Amino acid sequence: MVERSDTTGFLPSRYFTPDGVTAPPTHLCKPNGLCDCYSGMSTQTESPTQESLTSERYPMLLFFDGECAFCNRWVNKVKLADHAHRIRYGTKQGHTFQQRVAPSHPKFAKVESVVLVKRRPDGSEDFLIRSASIREVIKGLPEFRFFEVVLQIFPTFLSDIGYRIFSKLRTPLFGKWHHCRVPIEDDKQLFVD
Image (tube, rainbow, N blue to C red; front, side, top):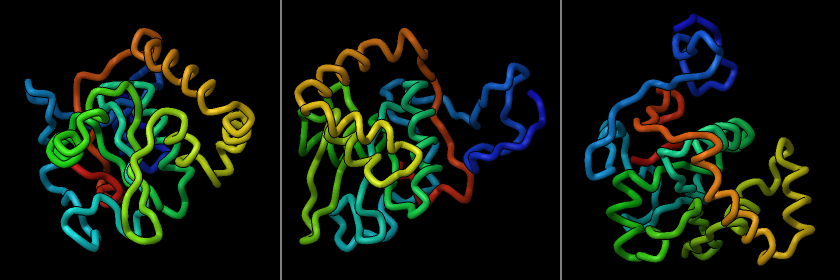
């Protein structure tokens, strides 16, 4: 590994391979797909009720495929663009998704998509998938303005078709990670286990 500074704020400088690709600190996942690498983090730090996945401070919670290399990179870019820190992140292989979302919403456990939990003004929560979740996540992020406009132009059914096609191609194109991502200390409040 090569010592180099990282401007993302996600990886310590010692996690770069000689070819310049970042290699985050990792832990192997358990055979059942659940990761225990987040054991030091609280599932909910500011939730108004135990059952709520979101809070006023963090009105959105984005679950993504933690084994998908593209998904991990995309989440890192979103995290850097979200200067207000309105989004928290978790993997679909993690404890929060597997034990709190999947049992009560089994259709989200099977879908090939990110799952966004969005807080409503009354405190209830909406679950968004595919292009609707991406639209909501990138809304208002200047770095993603082009993609926001593109998603506004196309009707949802067309952008969902594009999302489904890309979700089938992402692993062959970008590869798969067989380890859990471990956030640096400064970012731990943004990740759920």
